[in-house]
Length: 189
Length: 299
Image: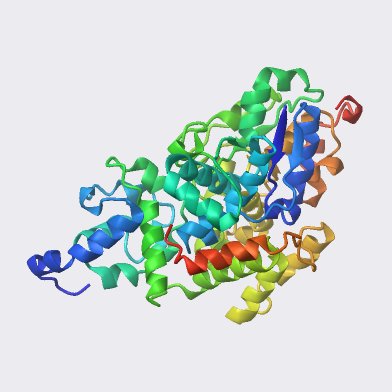
């Protein structure tokens, strides 16, 4: 992390802080940096910045650092931080908001995690449900790990846990139209 | 007792045992399940992390179909439960959100129906006393680690179910079946969800932590209420054992499978033979099938 001129940073950081506040409905300023979120986070061991540090980045307006961090993608959305925060800050919601914004700006630090979510939603849009077999095949193909978990396939097939055919729904395109409408409305909800 | 049933995608695929056992147990306990026709995926974490509106609209379509039928919705999968419940809450709390969602799904939806976890329905609506009455083959001497994971109990203002730090519903259910629930500290620790696929070095460590602590507490098996938790702990167990050089051999069950066993169903009827980690050996060792009466005719 480079050195920061705090006065300037705070002044220029307002817009980012406000953006996060508007889209997550969380006031980042109320975080008093106790670190309880980080202490309980089951993925913090693998993160480049702890959840507490990401909150501090938002307070200081360090948007590049926050949005390009691996932390926001590694967050497993388990909600432990949000439940334990003494200031009732919904950190999981903040992480989700940062991830959506990072993706919008093309700043995805964890390509595979992002790809998995995209392929998952493609499957839902196409069939109305997730085709687990197709999802894993496409994921392996696109990440160049052709034989990843291939040893599990025989048992999965034997026990009817994966299927070659997708479990499609005959909804007359209702799910496809949901995707279309969300796209045209921008979809920040 | 009639509910709209939302199985979710996993229960038609990798979580097939959950569907089989949930249906058997529900029927046996007098819960009628009306599967929502043409239900669609709830969007899971993928929609939730991509687009707030999509994450509300996908579950809303299912809830609207159930509402038209005048039924509350019961959900076995913890992750689906969380997404459906979040949508119902958002629609209930904001007229503007309701209107937006109704336009997107082209249906009326006022969230007048409730969303409940299957575990909650069995423990609260049916009640532990009724469950106890139906036990034919108690799980005597079976030490179980009740594993709740994340989304069944968190965040509590959303799930409205059990304690987020020390949930006990599944523990009590296991005790009602005659088993012993072990006291252990990892009952709500996250299994890493899809990290086992996308970031194995992270996901497998999280799975190992859970297996390690269950074993340390003396558990002979783990019981869950989430198809992704089960898949991680069961399907990935061998990989975890190899990576960490620890032998676990811990069978992982859906709570419905253990309820079904205690009520006299055969393991095959409940899908127990479809697990990666062999569960039959433990079932035989504990002599859990000693009175092999089938109770289907009573259902």
